[in-house]
Amino acid sequence: MNIRLLQLSLLIVLIFQSAVALAQKKEKKKETTQIVLFDGTSTDAWKDLKSESFPEHGWQIKDGILTVLGKTDTQDGGHDIITKEQYSNFELELEVLLSKGANSGIKYMVVNTYPGKEGHYLGLEYQLIDNKKHPDALLGRNGNRKMATLYDILPARDNIKVNPPGIWNKVKIVVNKNRVEHWLNDKIVLVYNRKSDSYKELVRLSKYSKLVNFGSQKKGHILLQGHGNEVSFRNIKISVLKK
Image (tube, rainbow, N blue to C red; front, top):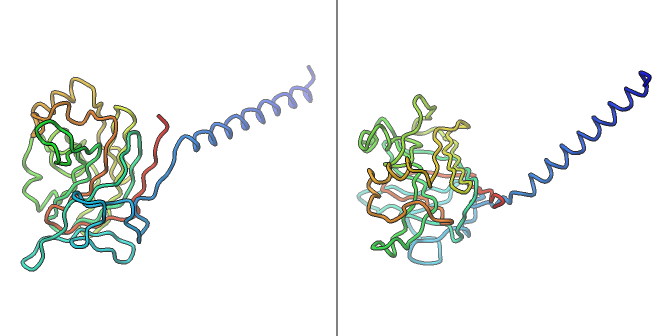
């Protein structure tokens, strides 16, 4: 085989590999469907826990930001809201701004059907908290109530980058069948498997110990918590992963 023919053969191989890579990339894109849960104006994707409508009080939209109001002497503050739809495999991405001393959470795989707790919307929680000012951050075990933890179950890794109150934090939650990831500011901070023995043991030691098969649902709502403190959210989107 002469050099020219060899070069031509290599070029064909490279073209083929590039075409395959492009096809795979396009196919990968087809495997996800992105849904905007909050675009800066519409709350159509959300509802109050007790109705099919977004709450009239306790939440506000301003400058493209969705804010749950804190409880004060003159106002009750906002309560929890959930997505109208339920999701199974997904990547949830959003930005969060805490007020000083705030405590809140993003719950996922939320259902209201746990035996003995019917009607109560319960689920796994990505903890949102001012680690330095809210006392709950010092409770629990091994730091499992601090920012970005799986609340009261699993702590985040050490030395994670947490922006202080007044500065936006980027949050991502990935649920791919039983594997779950918590991300904060573009860094993965914890991983667990909802069916593993280690996870089940941690649940047994947590406040959720009496809930049968806690967190094992195939699908559930997303919940933004109203917990008495002002917290803001923006750019909320969810990518539904292929099963």
